[in-house]
Amino acid sequence: MKDGRPVVLVTDADRGSALAIMRSLGRRGWRVIAAGEQEGCLGFRSRYVTERLIYPAPWHAPAERVATLLEAARSYDVDLLIPVTDDVLLPLAAARERFAGMCQVAMPDDAQLTAVADKWQTLSLARELSVPVPLSHLAGTVAEAHALAAEFSWPVVIKPQRSRLLDAASGVDVLEVAYAVSPTDLVRVMSRFEGRCAVLLQEYCPGEGHGVELLAYQGHPHHRRGQFAAAERAARSDALRVRAAAGSGVEMDGPDHGRIQGGAGRPAPDGDQRAHLGIAAAGGVQWDGFPRSPGRPAGEWPAVAPAPRAG
Image (cartoon, rainbow, N blue to C red):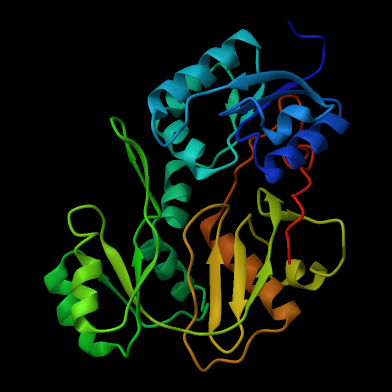
């Protein structure tokens, strides 16, 4: 039963990022319900958690997990459901209409999700925004990949168009980036993807990774430090992460979504440039994961502190 506080249900309680969300909203007076796959989830130990929920592993039983979260949203009179990872987000997005009128779900619309989950679309967006990208071609078959190989030097990056595929029967299928060092190797690796998912063939760009992470709402980045203020004024946006690889351009992605890495031979952007690129690229997607708070004007949803990141 409600005690006058807004109720939030946070998934993936085994993640540090989920724990950060629970702590942040708990400190702001929310009643926090933590959901995870096993008893020992890190988030279950938070003092801000009032209820704990265990759901089936999303990669094996996405439908059952959605049903469990739906029942929890109904039973606990949840105001806001926050899916933290793609393994939960993708099945929820496919069933978003089932939560309509019951609670708000903190996720973008289908078009926004596709823009960051589909690496080819993300790549096209990056080009439109003048974000440096590597030489890339889309291939759906072994024959197509073999025909395109002549345009690359070795090794070649073989990146699935989507990192995760949702199948109602088998669950969430995770696809990982691979590398080919020869035409024979390309055929071998590409055969694993043919019939499952198209791939991006990309030039290999060695370099050192640097990250910029933004938490934003309706185009306005929220930050507690002033280092990105100039970049925010230059180009306001929504939440995406942009990484600049030293000597190799820029890589960008949203939370647990598709990435792009820039072409070789380009100087690494400095901190202000990385922030500007991050904000500009995010704005192109119009990422908006958090819905408007009931009874609050736009932009006044309590900010959620991001989890600390190693390195």
